[in-house]
Length: 158
Image (tube, rainbow, N blue to C red; front, top):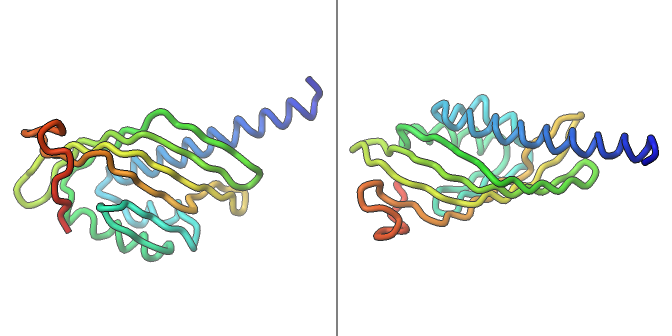
């Protein structure tokens, strides 16, 4: 292995770790009452957040407004992300993750199970990795008491 090969591999590993840290910061801020002022700067100005039945937001300001409203719907959420596959290509990258999220909805204390797959696009701007897009493919959104075997897709509150 040449010195250039070693430098390229170290950069590749560093990029992947920085993207993992970005995703983990995102999850921590979501679990902090969907902290909109913390979450918005993790996205590019032209970013898209597409949660399918969970909602849609475009642009950093739109994403901030979306997350500012989230605590009105969700009382508690704990985001667990696993199984990352991250492909880096220069200053752009793709990532996929599994999401397992126990949560409690506002107004009735309804416990829910959410399972989904994230498909993310990342872009490096000014030496920092940011989300260019986050797309969520919901596998199930189920009441805790009934479970995902009986009710795989409950109505998402709006």
